Amino acid sequence: MINNRSLLIVGGLAAVAWLASNSLYVVDETQRAVKLRFGEVVEENIQPGLHFKVPITQTIRKFDTRLLTLDTDTSRYLTLEQKAVIVDSYVKWQVINPTRYYEATAGDELMAIRLIQPRVDESLRNEFGRLNLQEIIAERRDDLMTGPTAELDSLMREELGVAIRDIRIKRIDLPDDVSAAVFERMRSEREREAREWRAQGQEEAERIRANADRRRTVLIAQANERAETLRGEGDAEAARVFSEAYSQDAEFFSFWRSLNAYRESFADSDNLLVLEPDSEFFQYLRSAMPSSAEE
Image (cartoon, rainbow, N blue to C red):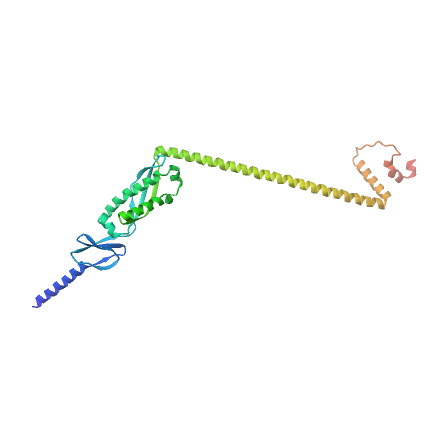
């Protein structure tokens, strides 16, 4: 009887363990889940935590809702002017509607990738087809992908229950036949810009040089005018001083001027003057000589 009771207890515990393991389940914080009954969804978007289900008749499908990356195949697109570009890109996507995602892909991530990739390729092909090569090269790649990202996100939310968070261009290459033409065009464009900058620089240099010459002319004229004014004032002051001195002692002033004339006339030993003996030029010399010397 004891053995039978032990067996019953063990069997009961095993049944409880089996029932618990098949009735309770945990949804991780990085996941969302749906509850199925014979393949039909009976509960949508189950949040993280501990939950209960009916064993055997109900099953749980869990989906990773973290941000996922789809590295697309390198593709060749034509621009507006029918020039080819080689584009390498990737897509960031995320499951936001577990029920719709399950119905569209049966929860298979590879199936979802096979459905998303053609849509990305079509969207990029349309975007590059409406731009010319110059716009593709000149525009920022983030701005270039804004339109395709928004368009594809709206479409995928409805079709697959996933959100397209971002489409990024890793690399844009040009075929060899296009590269030479593009580089030549870029070189011509840079040379044109350089010529424009040089012309603007020459024009600005000429303007600065002309302005400097004008200011120089004005300053020199003002300086000459000031110099002439000061020279005239100095001459006038000198004349006034001489006039005052002359008026005070005319005889001494005449004598002083004669001495200066003698000094300047005989400063060089080679100077030669031919004058009459009674010339007024020697009046002060004659008056300074003794009578015997005159005779």
